[in-house]
Amino acid sequence: MKLCLVSSIVCMGLCALLLLACSPKENAVLRVGTAAEYPPFNYEEANQFGGVDMDLCRRIAQKLGMDVRFTKFYFNELFSALASNKIDVIASALTITDERKKTMDFSLPYYTANQDLVVRKDSNLTIDKLEDVGKHLVGSLSNTTGHIYLDEHLIDRDLMPKENLLLYPTNLDAMNALMAGKVEMVVIDDSAVLGYAKQFPIRVAFTIATREHYGLGMQKGKVLNEKINKALEQMLNDGEVQEILNRHLMKE
Image (tube, rainbow, N blue to C red):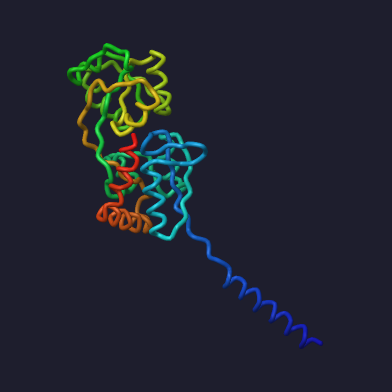
């Protein structure tokens, strides 16, 4: 009787092991953070994340045999989310800068952008040189390269009163402030002007040729970073990144 009991327990254990061995393995998850409000690079529509950044991450995850999960944050929250291991990647039209490199790693660059100063279409405002901007009320998403550029090149040089630069938690807030007449212009990446021009009656009044490069922000020193970069490098070399860019930028 005891022998039968022991045999039954052994059989049950073997069956359990076989079931575990035969069950499908779950893929690792690439956790991606985005502001999702910068069309055509990242946006949310009908509870779906879309744009250049999202398609890049989906394809990279696929090449790495991973699933992908997108989480929406305010732009300023993305940096702390990365530092606190809530996400593996920031994919949000993020410019590669030396200051940001102190706290994160970056992927290879995949796009080059400039800064545009946009005004309402019905505005008569003209800008001939950067110094002219300092006389006007300008809206900006906080902590962006546009915000930082105006800080360093105008405010820090006493060419613009600090109170003339109004900072907002989202680009949509800045654009709505422009429409409401609370600011006279908004500084924003030229890549985003393509998307926002479909939502708001705006025109470009001045372009600052910053020639900044977008990259994926990643936690410092992670092995995963090398794999992401290798996948992205393959996509750059075989033209897949350009195909993604064309698909989103040309339809704008």
